[in-house]
Length: 424
Image (cartoon, rainbow, N blue to C red; front, side):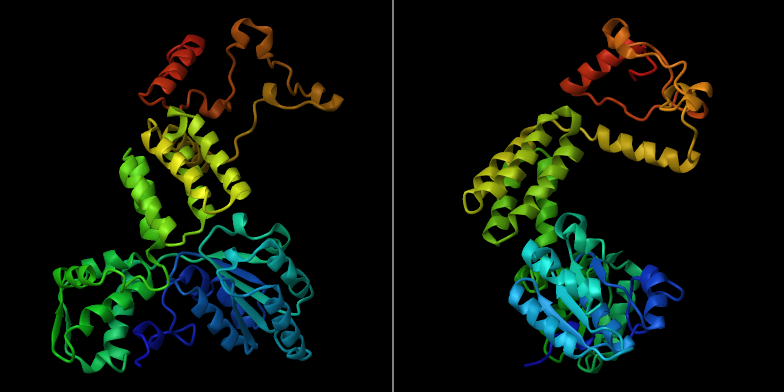
């Protein structure tokens, strides 16, 4: 049986590795650590196919450390303890600590993660975890605090082009074929920045022609994928495409499409917590102030799932999905915080106005901290006009009400209190 193209092209050294120059380019932080021969425990966070596993192997080879690998999908606490015992017996004086690589570490339970703590803390092993999920939510805090988190990015077009050329010129099978690349838009679009997916699509596209000459066009790639839609989805990589369709259907107020994509995820064995987290994000980002109850319901959905489990949890997910899809939409809060963050980046750390400062000591009171502050509850409507922004940016506006019933009421109230300057 022929080894898949993605495996045949797996890089063995940092110089062969494509992408992640912000981490392993010349002079980059992780590159310096690897070159020094000593690395901390690490968690690689990024989408599928960006080289998390490959980078772990390369690190092990470069610093000449024993390498142990566990998959969170099929490993238990006993497996973790067995590997740690093997690692202890493989540790020699000044040699680099054995590397324990755990793929999909976000799937490890709390007890499994707890079993790693002692070995990581004492340096018995150097942990390298790989996750497609935000480790802040999925990795227990004591373990997270002992690891450096590095974010791996999807491949850019120029990096995909480099990988494509390497496949055609260096792979011992493809370089013997007559393969002409006429168009790359479909190849890169369907791969979505995923190196493994790109190579799977390329292999699928040329395989049907045997040893004949093949000209790769957007039309050919699309046809071959439609004939075999799962072929470029090895290892569940379509997971990201489906969750994207799910969220966009909610944002687009289409409950039928949203429930269909939910059903696809449920039937495919998707982690219910993954779906619930996306619903919470959607409630804040896409429904927002147009219906603040959406965020409450999404949070309740998350909590309920953990209480009742599966399969009944699918009903809770369905209820929340339909509610969010049929709710009015607003991204005004999302736009407001991004606008404010951009403004902070431009203006820096402006001083807090004196009247808004806390004055817990007599010295601070002597310096007029809080002196001119007006307590809102002492005035009609629990409101009094005063300036709350630094004087350098007085009059700046970040939140703009969008035309839905809930925000129209907010805007009307702001105009009543402030006049037009806060009610725009």
